[in-house]
Amino acid sequence: MIPSKYTFRTQEIQLHIPKEGTQRYSIESSNFINYSSAIRCTHKKEVSFSIQYDEDQPYIRFANINIENEKFEFSDGSLAMQDIIKRTASVYDKLCLKLSYTGNVVAIDNICELQDIWNKVKVYLKSKYKGNQIQRFILKTDAILDSEEEIIKDILLYHNFGGLVKSIYQKYSSDSCSKTSQYLATKYGKIIAKEEVLLQSAKETEDIQLQLQAHYPESKEYVSVNGTYNFKGIEASWLQRALISYIEKYGRQEYHNMLSINQL
Image 1 (cartoon, one colour):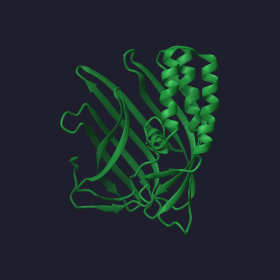
Image 2 (spheres, rainbow, N blue to C red):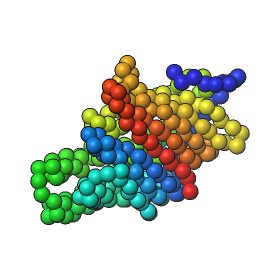
Image 3 (cartoon, helix red, strand yellow):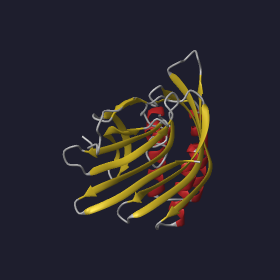
Image 4 (cartoon, one colour):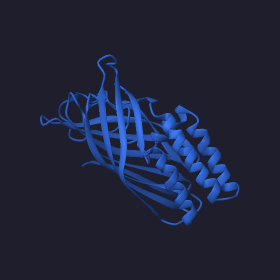
């Protein structure tokens, strides 16, 4: 359990997913795209995040995410690799999602549009690059974009939108942990880390801070996650900022990854 420092009385808070409105965020992620060569990708993007509500579906929110500006920086790697990553990421430039009242993604409304964009990117990649490596990459991406379930897993990775779109709207306490889960991209593929989330503070100004941590697997902890989330508002709890770091440990080798989100 996450220790709570200097807590003299128990606080409790219920976060509510907003019914409607639009916020803009800057999102920066840094993660490894090639472990053997220790190549890191830093992805900075500004996004518009809007939520709408339909009275006929009270437990559903309709969310649109649009990337307005973005920049990639690579620690190393060929221009071909960088081009492939940038063009593939463009598939998620616009997302139309259905969210549950807890913030969980339950459907992708523009899945056909995403698949059409990927098919155009795929035509370009096949014409531009040859070899077994690009063929394996295309087959792997095909498997993701052919399945709504796999697309959801992919967009919920931290280097995509896993920090902004998160099943986190629930009740929290300063003396006991609540549970969430998070998809992570690791050296050995996607995993689900079980998170413990503790209320750090809830002020009269409706500023709410959560602290989270996770380990995977829980007994060996070869991946560890730590972070904070700050929200503003009770009835409509808009994310203000978040800072997440997660470390992959394989023997003596460590890989440090990060995510930061700030409301503009």
